[in-house]
Image (cartoon, rainbow, N blue to C red; front, side, top):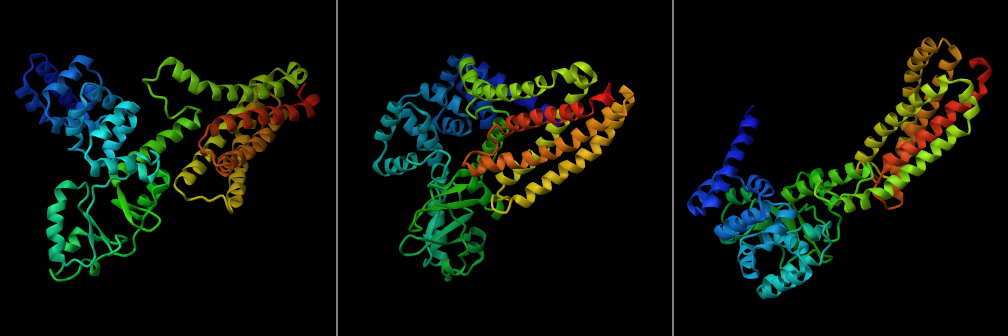
Length: 455
């Protein structure tokens, strides 16, 4: 009930803001904004007309627009940027973190991106250009340069003075990165430890030299695993000489985890991560059709397996009604294994080397599940069709195919990983093909073998 009331309140505030826009009432606009979270406003603006979005940009100050840009998704960011000239964009950028600026610039048209970068001050232009040079899904593409890094030889008194000076301009203040005289990262210090230390102690004397760091080319998924494993609120990015280039904060890591999870869920079903509910019909078709074609091929293989036993099915019609039980349950069993393996690979809990024990274990799980399900299914089928041998056949087919499903559910993502492909890459489509084709073949082969007993 509390959540519903909160949502209702946000809707009322959004409606008040729309009415304020219609009247051009800046005072009311500001009053409503003070009670809205930028993310809630961004979600509301996605439903606005272009004229309303443009009017909000013209009536709002740069601080509000900076907060809105940081909260908005890519589509709304591009729409808002279209209503603002380059000079206004630069004044808004001055109130944003560098990593957020780079994300926006990376999505703009090349010409406008170049215009904005060229208009920046030399020092800022150098930083932005360097950040733009990294791939979006790497540590370099995620990092920000808004952090506090101090020389380890500073006294605590001098360090606190520096923190007060730099703090208002930085994104992270809880962790101070400690450098040596060569600007290399040698440790980190918690702000709490700094505040309770003696004024004449040096920063390096209270710092932790066990630093977890990554290089700018490190994949974002690997970065997220490190942050999760070591419970970090930020992870530094260094070059080959261990010079500090930037940091990645935990809020960006949360976005990465959500992105990777969404990507895995989509790819399991053969859907591209680039597709959204706003994608055009042609874009959706272009991204889905290739995997549907793969699915069609596996469907034909299953159909051919059935066709080769047409005479058997014609003589015992009950086979056509029961064979899908084997493939359906085997497919679900394989998907259970698939989910466990893909999750373990994503969390870095499973390595390709020595994975044969896990493969055998999943095959054994499938075997035991097959025996349990096969007994129940066989008994039910025997009673329904008054034929003990039909129940025995479905029992044998269930045991064999569920063991194969467990084996395939483990092997498919591991093979894709070995081929340097995403383990979630339409694994369920390949698994369905295996369980369908072999399920039909095993069941109908056993039926052909025991055909005289089924008549």
